[in-house]
Length: 392
Image 1 (cartoon, helix red, strand yellow):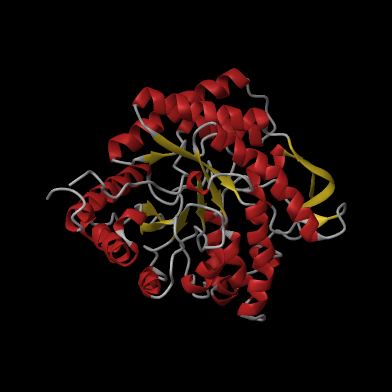
Image 2 (tube, rainbow, N blue to C red):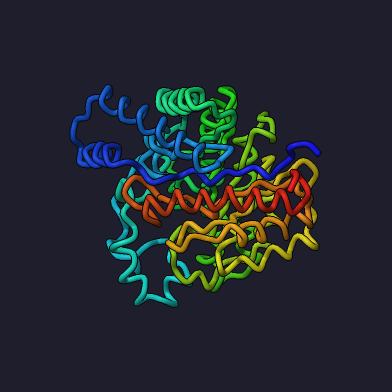
């Protein structure tokens, strides 16, 4: 019996240390920060977070996204041809992407958003005003170097860097240059492809985060229909594949979620409908939420949905949105029921989403983050024994 145990990973974003948060606050206020000071903090922080992941039992590690200002908006500073416009409104009711769930529970969200949405946002909408091109070579090289150095120092063999999908870069991108939003989206995709390729060429896995694929269902339906949402999403999936063109799928991870906030989520699109789209992405690993109490029951779809050859599933078996630490036996149960349907060799244990949406917004306490990752690793060990992958 060989060591074919279920490996562990997570979605990427981890809670930032205080010194990195303080530096980001200064940058957001427009203050000068010595690049050497920031680099020293990042090197130290990434080394420590890789060490903690290894100690917790995580096999495939990330840099915690420590070098980024947010999970998606970081990218506007890495692209030419994008201009920021003044915001439409100051309250969530005035947001251009108003979700049905937000309207249904408006009183809850009126209290929630002011305290739970602290993340870097340039403060408005984005417009394509010229040729979009990638200019973040120095930043992505820094992130790659910091993660690889930490992995080498800690003896970790496999790592990944999260990036943002074209559709999630600028959900309301205004086109003033290309003649259509679809052409502007394709330009974003070609530019982001440079970031993806840099990560893969460095020997790391690239993870493409695409939260807006599921989220837009809550925006469009109602008043629209599922077909309206699919019609919106198809060009977004095409854009991801355009950005991934030429990259080996086994080095690509594609992550979707229903939004990291811990709200009601009563109008989320069913996993079955999402799978019809995301399984078309040229990624070897698909990460999705399955510990979320609105979606945990959906593991049953794999009784009927055929996962294409060569694709691996990384279901979330740990929630990022509650301070309750999952019991390892429950983690194992979540893994086993999917593994028995698709094959244990095609399953990696993961989390639902990131434990932090950015430098300032964490979903759980740091001590709980590590306890959850330890429970993830222990649950994967239990499942591996139960499935006969390793000796009991």
